Image 1 (cartoon, each protein chain N blue to C red):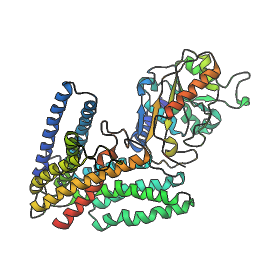
Image 2 (image 1 turned 30 degrees about the horizontal axis):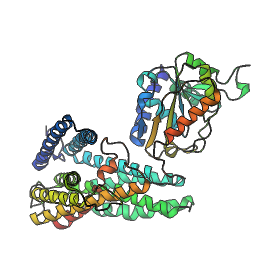
Image 3 (image 1 turned 135 degrees about the vertical axis):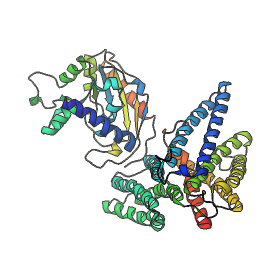
Image 4 (image 1 turned 180 degrees about the horizontal axis):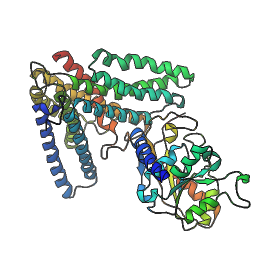
Length: 216
Length: 320
């Protein structure tokens, strides 16, 4: 109950004004985000803001079922952060270290379980935020996930500019207008390499849509 | 109604109220005409004009409520325009990661600059950005110790803050100007409306004259749609209206009104092409997609970045 209230207050009275008034996000094709779970929302990762923006940009019917996939060794550290991650963000924790997982289980098992329960998961195939405003290679976990759930749509969401507003390792939030471009959903086609190629190509074409300012 | 609105509400100024009523009459007329032409099969470009008009409704409703409520809400409204304009500029212009905190200070200058206007502290208002902020920006940049692209970065930040904060904040100080013996109702809110109506009408008039008769281009390499016919036709329209309205809405003489009209027309054009030059330099068409049919906030207030400070100092010199 407390967690649900906190989640509602945090997103509607803190994140929403920050994202839409202080920053300003230009969203293209919001209608391509599914209204219902299960779904896999795939985004490039520049900043903690990516998750926040994506969550409030989603339709209200989906918001309740939204769960960002996040590394347990980062998000389940300390009492408060753990509570915040579990109840406010409602993350699907991934245990990257073998010794933290139950014997013989796969790191993606909790994600599969969340999808089976009808959740829409937010997945960052780059694995980490990395250098702001630079896309790195996608890890193959997303292909494995899609193979396990071939009927679940994989929706690509491209972000630009949030890495300038709040890059990794900095606490000062500076206003910048940001872009969020949603692409047509993808489905598993039977081959891992082919799937990854399609996903990467989809992101490349989304990234060419906007104007990319100089920033170094 | 005036019971709810405070002392500083412009509802007590009949000139402002009549001007706003006229503005809405024009807006309704334009909506009827455009919808009629649209329904008669004009498509393509007309879709954009319909959308642009719809956005005009929102802008004018916001502006008139801000002005009618109180001088504080008007100042907040103008400060918000500065904020949105600056944000568009700093998003598009090349900036450096090390200057993130400088950017933050530049944003902070907006409430401070509008505070000087609210306090009617003219001396501080006029030197804060061009002297104090001008000197502070490189100082803070030096502290972070990165010299690569230093000059380019400092120049970009200065230009951005001068146009979107300093220039546009003259609307705020114009609003604070009081009544004169010559025209007790030709005070701040009326002057602001006079300037905004004429500047925006000049844009529209130049567009329409250019569409109808335009052939010789003024600055083909910057803005291919700007023609001498549009510029001169716009100037004729704006100057005529500026002269007529000046007796009613401003403390200016008829003669001063003529030159105000010519000035608004010419420098509105200059402000427009300067922002166009920036966009062309960066290789973009619109500064953002915030105002459907118009582009960004900076696309809409481009002319005002020139006319606001120039008109303010013209009136301030001759009438105050």
